[in-house]
Image 1 (cartoon, rainbow, N blue to C red):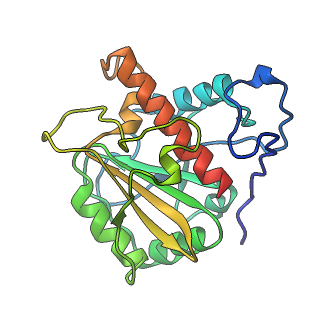
Image 2: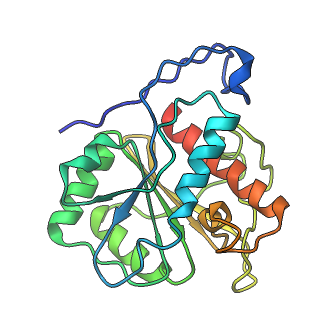
Length: 226
């Protein structure tokens, strides 16, 4: 089983142009964000408008060839996970990976896939426990503010923006590397994906939503380029 890789042609040295109207040719398969289903009782399905809006933002503000914005979801047990280079896992509650899930998720990451985990306030303990099963020899390590993920498209000199206030803690971004490639990125105490959701679901001010979309763009651009 192999990941379907998405190749982005860059005519500027290191960054994707900010507008499709700049005339940069695209050479990529249509990109989708797929929501990862999981067991354990957590609400893996919450805020389905988030990915739709994020994909729409990518269409309007990057040269990435984005598929029709929609809510795409995939089960770990399905071979379909190997068709998506980018998976999002989020929720408020418990996450449980079976032994088969553990094996398949590790295979996914080792094959070139990227897992973005966004704590929606309540999944921190279970996600850390379960991801340790997937990578028992690796720890989630906080990424420095000068990491490429904070400047792949837009510049965030102080690391992650704070989108939602929960416990008055600073936002943190953690990663796991396999074969020198960042394959798991975990955001904590920020809730980036909530900032993508419809205003009727979360009444974030426009400037916070814009920060969430820009950081989301950074994460996706980084995942596709590395």
